[in-house]
Length: 537
Image (cartoon, rainbow, N blue to C red; front, side):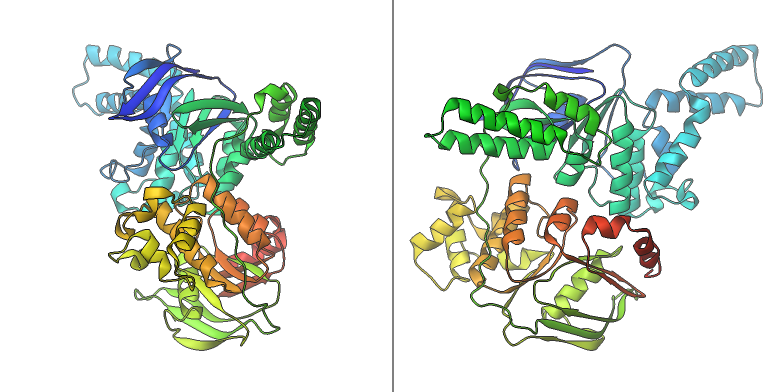
């Protein structure tokens, strides 16, 4: 258990947290949410002791152990993978190394014997005999092959290091587990393994994530950081979002009687708690929701951008035909070879691959930014397309403020129109006069989405548009693309985004493609499809 009492933190005039009081108890998983810059990662650092609050304190029960997912990928380069994982339990690692050093002595004394006996007892108490087995199981579950378990960390690539550091945090059954964006750079199979691991985890978990599917699957509670206040809500992210939206709508509906509003909220709680869920947390979560009262549901003050894509003309019968496209990367890696597919009216196609460079390369080719090694593609005559590349940085290397930047892409040049459009994307007042060069990653993405909306295109090619966005913007974009009536080709690492938008999945591998007219969840779970996917690599 971890208790936060009267914690406050400010940087200059900015108050990040003000008199925060909250208790995290074992058996629950808490998802920490908040807009970009709200202080989610800082809050976890306060809990871990890395940052000292100006007032208040954070306490744990005596003898309890906390682990925190490390972000520095180079910190353990001088250690083996196995040692790095076991270092997640510092006392166990120290005992293990002291024990090994004593047994390695040539001149073993009586004093060494007594010391060894003490170490052996503590080693057994700390479950040391199972340490390497547990570490190996975690590494394998997280997708790191046995051939790498005794490699040096310095020899691993960045993606493998992420998996090792995650295994380190999970190792040794910590009493409190802090995870900051644990799903970053993980493939979907590994994320699913992590969801199952945390669902079975009996102690306290506190996690920051922008992955809504992940939050829905693992969380029993939501911790909302909003304007220096930290509030605790029962239920997963979807429950928090839908209930807060309903409460906000009710607040705006002045004509509805109080008892009608109460009944509406009670019905919502009942429906949500009764709704069957695949999550292992479903049973305990349903019990929590059943105990809720209407007073527990509050409207959110969160602001959502307005995202809606309206095509200027309807697509015809011929959209896109790809024939025999092949591409090899500069380092000689075969990205794809002789791929063929046709895009049909009504298609919203999610592209997936173990090598996301293959998807970016394909999108660059069909958007005429790059050329294929061989093959051709043809867009229909009715198609007007807009491309959102993976790295939009080149668009912002200009000495323009946001009003002038967006004016470049708008037929309507009037300043009030441009400012109004920026306002809907949460750039209001002085924010709209920011220089394009100094924007954050999330701000750049919102600007690129504004550019896409202004294009009036009926075919969108979007390469990881959810990257850098906060949950509010992801949700708004998600809803905007569900409503979009044109043709859509996209990649996203956001599970829920893909599941709710795509009606067709194409996986690209060096040995071909797999093209399925099904949902993302069906694509991931179908046993026949799993076997077919293996043959692509």
